[in-house]
Figure 1 (spheres, rainbow, N blue to C red):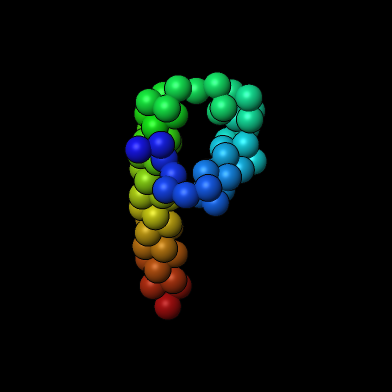
Figure 2: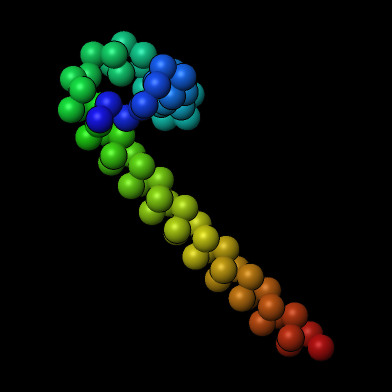
Length: 73
């Protein structure tokens, strides 16, 4: 419900938000539980979409390299 299931996950989540997404600890701690969950859900969805976008971009680059290498033969 709160985006973590134990104390270690709580601290890992806070650390990730602070280090990778530049949130401040006071901003995180001042969120209401439902706000925190909403933002974490939105962040997780964005990360999933970004991962998919990067994978698609990598596949396109791989296809282009493969195509170019065939032309050189």
